[in-house]
Length: 246
Image (cartoon, rainbow, N blue to C red):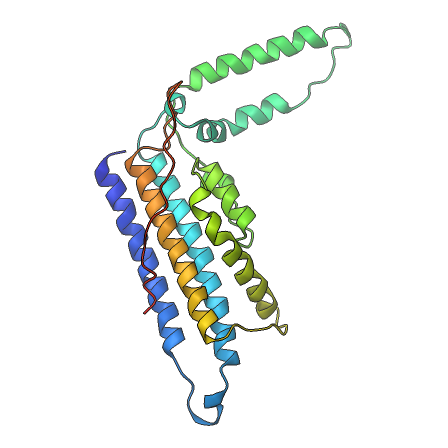
């Protein structure tokens, strides 16, 4: 992937993150007037739900954009990370895993028939090696579930992205989800105090900035390519980013 494409990805993600941060900041800075000035529970409930919605929305948008950039870079299956190649061969593997009816005229042919089936798969893979990567992102990414640590790790893994840079954020995602779900269902929930709300917002947008940086670096350094035998795949470094929640 050309550096220009990586920069374009970064620019898109910066714009995506900017409007989400602005919207959360606008709601956070809003203060009720009149008799309800001393009550902030409703305000906090709205803010918790919005922070979670923008976290989930940004992660989905960022991974989709990164996946599209892989599809647009002309990468062949033979040069792609194994998980990306496997995702592109999902139909072939599905066909391969389907059982075939036994041959009534040769009931003892199971072993030989399996070898022939294996041979067809090998030939198919050889034919597809030079085909360009075209990920079906709706199939590859799990975007139909609430964003939890498990879902985030799964989505990163499916795009061959190391998740170690995000380990420190996982407890924040879990805590946010535990608060957001009851609020979304109209249940009572213990709301964070003002300091905790600020920390919550900062942790969420730091996670988003970290994801943006990791995806940009992976695009820039062609982290989606297969690692040559005997070499070591570089891991994304933990970035130093500002929270931007003033």
